[in-house]
Length: 183
Image (cartoon, helix red, strand yellow):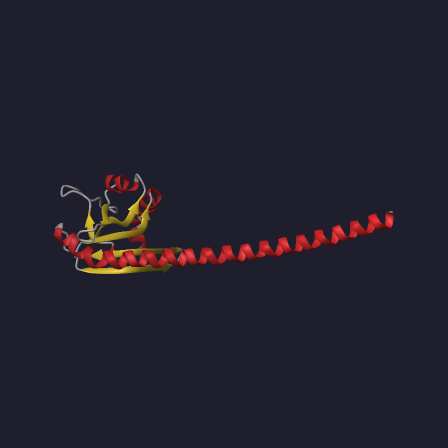
């Protein structure tokens, strides 16, 4: 009887070890799948952002010119890597005395606006070549959370969104006064 019980115990133990091994293999596969999914998600988000930038840039110069800000040059994805400073700006528009720094998001969140404002305040530190220029900010997006658009407007940023009509528009009214973030 003990031999039979011992044999069944060994069989159960063997099955338990096999199950444990399969469970570990499944965990490993899930971790690999999760890693691949995050990589794809990052790639999708990155490409989506680039597409929105590509839609905003051609219209941005005209939008601001229509508002009386004669920007003539537009640059995308400007990277700064100097000393202990590291920053990327999605888009910069320039004229003689003004720089407009645009943060582009597929979905704009209030935290994105707050971070952009902090970057604007330090713009001359990131880009000393523009230290003689006023710095205005803008956010451009496809969709936004409940409060981010109002938050951006109230904090002196131009608000640019996609529309069905002209594709891209500035939502601020004509009486809007942008904040010079480095004055």
